[in-house]
Length: 349
Image 1: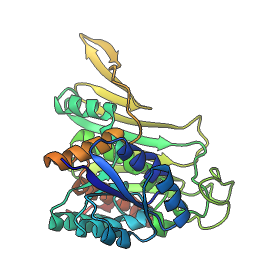
Image 2 (image 1 turned 30 degrees about the vertical axis):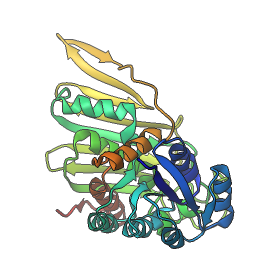
Image 3 (image 1 turned 60 degrees about the vertical axis):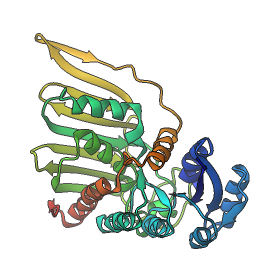
Image 4 (image 1 turned 135 degrees about the vertical axis):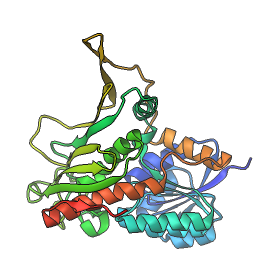
């Protein structure tokens, strides 16, 4: 079969480090064109990946190049319009996380996918890890019993991505660490649990480090807009009685950065911390802890991109479906609303 003609919209960190690097090693893909609103970045990516066509306007790229597959790796506020444009141009789309800024925008992406007949996958790379796939299979087998409570988080001691760039500008990012880091582990927790339906969310956000140093000056400048949180905490109730605690920060006075998922089941518990799975059980009245020996992870995005090209080739449903991302954005948006109103927020059916 002919290789899939591939183009990318957005050649920043995730664009080059994840998408282009992974698809360049994919035997089913030929990189045809790159696009970035900053010409220097587009040209640098084209040189690095030996691509002839470099654009600054993604609509022009979609018109001029007959592409089969497009990655969208732009700032969050461009995800929906760029994805919809690519779908309307007859392309399959691999869009970075978060899918978009609001549940309504994600629904518009789903509608465009359905109308186009093409596939759309969201770049929720944690679903493709060996630890997530093991945990999901373990839960699906009933080995945890009834999951009645869960926790997830990703906390950094010092990890604000600059000050004044799109990450810290709410109109472009949608928020701070909740939508940046939280989308990963809220998603993977719900994915492993089988996506119970969220019904209410309560939470709080804090911005205590905005006027301090820019902890990652390479990402953006020391001055400019900072209208997002640096810590978000929350509590989700589901229709099956399960609950979820969550906490995400770019900067906190803690020991060190770490990420985790914890599931509390009636038969066993499961914890994932820094990619290590631990299972907590009871054997004849004796506590038993076990650590599965999982295969080493592949490079950032490799498993994800291989999976997506296989889905296109074999007409399979992608693991990271945008339909499920609607629920994730419902949770994230509800927490932001809860923090604004200082009250619990119901999620509409």
